[in-house]
Length: 240
Image (cartoon, rainbow, N blue to C red; front, side):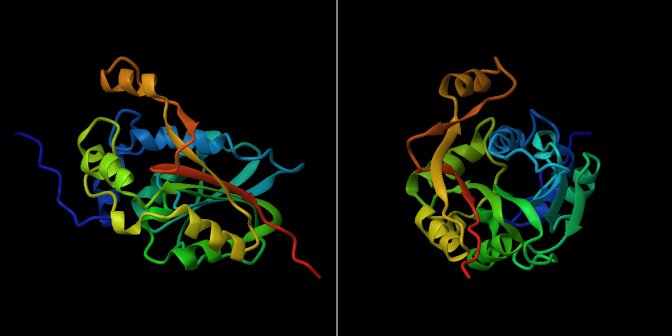
């Protein structure tokens, strides 16, 4: 019997992550590029405070950041119960919640990470406000997302959904892609000056990956913000 055809979902439909629940930790599967991005994100996590710290992984999915988190209690928030179950198997304390209404007290976390989630949320201002509300003053906010450009739509949707290493079909709704200037303004309102830089696959490595000559690709900084970009900032202490 031939395998069933993948179920067709509307763009940005959360249920696709249930459909692909067995793919999270397959480094050659539908989410392989998320492994590369998690490693790049992990490089920006500051050393944990003495005695350990608290790290919140907003939109944690299957917990792909876990191998790159050291010295922190790793808490992950997601709406997908199947993803949270996978994340728990990798040491993440999972909490089912809407990222725009986090069930945590103000100033709870030393680090808040929002990786490949901001381009999926219907209410970006609330999501950023919540992420920064639960971040301690002096804490670090890290994110990566997709710019709202024709180039991002071409490379990550029109072409990207049909090549090895690209996002699963219908994973993204380009209408939700995030302009970095908007993101910086929202972060500034939450007392986090956000520095941004472009992020992309190392070209020769990616070519070798497409030719099936290497299993993974390093994500490196680029001068262009036209597609994927990272942000990093430290929350200022409130003025008296």
